Image (cartoon, rainbow, N blue to C red; front, side):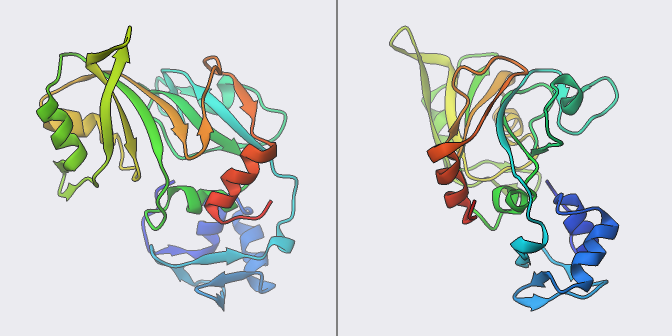
Length: 241
């Protein structure tokens, strides 16, 4: 989730699904919230590089985590003409998507009720891998791969270096499809990188977030993340189960 910083602490907590805005005020008043190691007070502002901690005992609940395969045409941020991700598939628990995947793209989204993971997974302060398979309208060259991997200047910033390689078809390197691993998550980043090099994306499929693989999950279906996979996932985020 992207915030416009600075942001008031109660709104920050609410947007990260720790509590409602009023519930967040209660957490702050009771001293359960720390900003950079110091107890927060009502009205405090959170800046982009601040460390916010909510005492586990204050928000203890039964957390659930799902690997969900978002279909094309479904939006993580509902807009006119798009299907709402929470209405397409019914979950037994009240969950929310962590992060975004634009309506024209499809693939892996983490669904959970654990607000602790939002900042750890999405903030630019932390580095986590996300892997994609991307098919272009036209064939691309090795120079295209080199430029994408080195970093592309788009809208005033240069993307970080990334791993990128040709996908294989029938055991041979593809001429129009590549795989890419990003460690940052700018809005529509891959599409904009390709557009900067005069290529249009026909299909964009996210296959992995950190250690979570999409595997054979069908469109608009999901599986539970549990056991060692969940332990490893939370461990990489620095969170205890």
